[in-house]
Length: 123
Image (tube, rainbow, N blue to C red; front, side, top):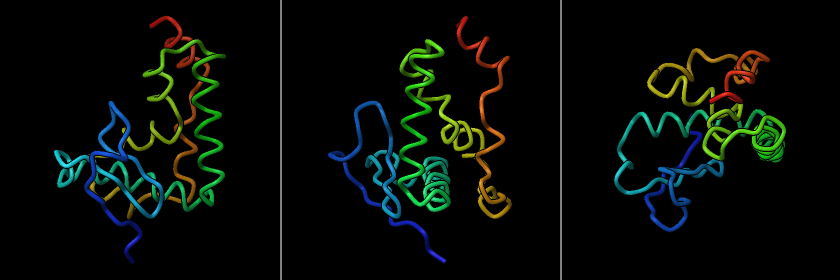
């Protein structure tokens, strides 16, 4: 079953990013369009978005970013990289079998722990 449509574009990808997903559409910069690691990272986001019925994904994504940024005092980049969905995607983007092995709501184990929050505050 095909869950995603890849689109090569420079216009829709925010500066500093290689791609962005609005399921089922995955917008990628031309320089990474054929990069399987980037494609897999974005496919993981497609699965997350389907599981949370899109709106739940975007609400949680924004909440996680704002909490990381303001409550835990992380830099913009660190707050982004520590969003639960990004943690799962970055950790598994090189495993091309990950989506075959992944359980439902597979992002849950990637929630920040108290020790990780303390470590990231110091960084």
